[in-house]
View 1 (spheres, one colour):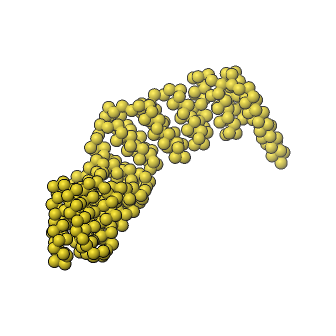
View 2: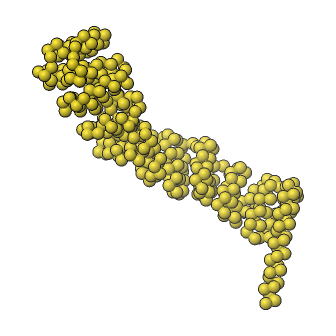
View 3: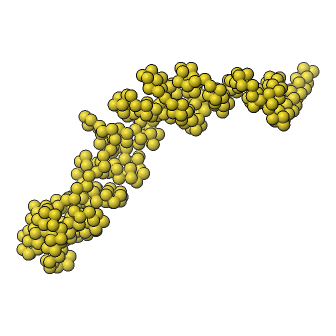
Length: 364
């Protein structure tokens, strides 16, 4: 989205001339002289011409002097001073309809320049809508942190345009994603991708949006497509995508995504990735798969902690004998003896209790 270009406006003679017959000749000449000097960049002479003329307080002449001074100080980059003068002229109620419309638009631009977004929206009320005013309203709502207000206006802005700039596409993606409108964000991101099919960032962003929408299969397919095009992913890039699913309280999705990446060769099947997959299945309470993966990992690494994890998973499923066997393996592999004994005592007590209950049921 482009930044608004705020060009300093010169108060038009034609606008002033509307009131020429109702003001004193010397005042009108001062306004003409000031405008000519301003257009020539002779700001001191313009200011001198305006100050030299005598006007009655609260008269139309006074209002027109304020107005001319407002545009003069704006031309010199004094935005806040220009706002004060133009706002004072506007509040007088003595300007023509044309002057009011012109000044409200310029006050909106000046307010935008100093990031007073509430005032931008205030001055744009009842102003004819153009691309310029619509864009100001969008950016003002965005500046106020109200994307819910900005997005409908942005949709209106881009509707029907033959070409949309990259910055507008990125805004549509970001705004929809921020409002958790992931399907809409995905559609805009696909347009971004059409323009940059060889950029890794565009593919990653599409996969992230699909993942946030709970569309694991589509996210994986997006990564596979990028991979098939010869776009290389770094380990950290894929890790972030998996972490995103895990952080969104959906470890089962992260597990499925990681398993798919391993299956299709997007990630190497290292002990670290295998352990992470087992952890994700454990977090997702898929205990059988987690136990199976930790068993394979324990056999590969011979680490006592991996065997201890197997034991905990088996015990959590009520598989007491398998858990006790894993505890023995953990003990031999050097796992923490206190932890091993604590789990063994608990498993054996549960096993004794189950046998006792079974015997009592059999007697009945």
